[in-house]
Image (cartoon, rainbow, N blue to C red; front, side, top):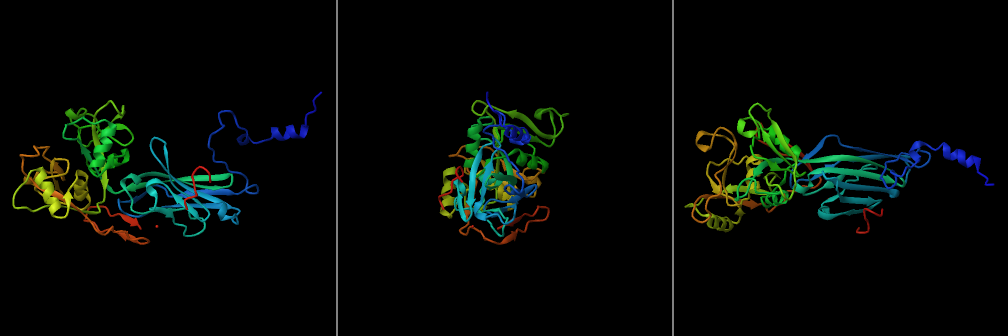
Length: 388
């Protein structure tokens, strides 16, 4: 006869439901809050909404934590920042254990914990890039206890539609990613495209977005753009096959570390001559994304058509007038003419020598009336995300 420990059986029966693991629970990451007198409760708080900056700026992603009892050894706390993509993949940004910190990938040398006081897990990111846009997770762990919070990093910038010289609907998803990158931009997100639509963007050709969906913004419904009686909005084709299906692209770019200008010359030029003239002037021929950023963020207004890097002819209009392409502001495009025999002016881009970074300060940029201002907050290799 087998003897059963009745007291042990009773203890098992009174375990809380959260402590009983089913087969489907095994291997899943859980956030578990245990009683204060057993370990110590960790609570993470992050900023609601979005944190706004621009390319080249410095930003603080706020995250604070509170743990009980308060005399918990800070050397036992692990702080981890991760970038989360729409496809639910994770990119390690920073891991800290006590006084040791390690950054990863493109964040090396640009990110560190602010650590202004106990309980501060905020991360500072310098020289923000277009690729930094997105959602970040702040996780604080104390032994077996952990909690997380999320911060959304948004960029001031401009969305623009793009198609190559080959024509419309010639890009699969990966081609679209490349052409945006070639023009100093990234594929836009849905939020960025929706914000552009709210500002009046109207475009009757569908394009790829960063999440693999295909959409297009319509401010003025009409028959040739999905029926006149259909409501205005961002029209959605859904998620498409990334390799086989072909569309245009919606690109996004942000602040320039430099200046776009129309080069004054004594004669018009073909594309090769235009590139050479920009180089002779200490610059390079402007990319499409740079021209859009200069139009939107630097208010570049020039009623003269000129070459840009992809071989198209464009010009930026902030103040519409009759002889400059119609009643709406925007970057006008005259197509992709013959590179050798057609002659135009040229738009050049000159990069700033000074990076413009002012670590530890706060700067409010002055902008023109009617344009929203943006306040921007301006630093040990043994740590691995998987084993600490």
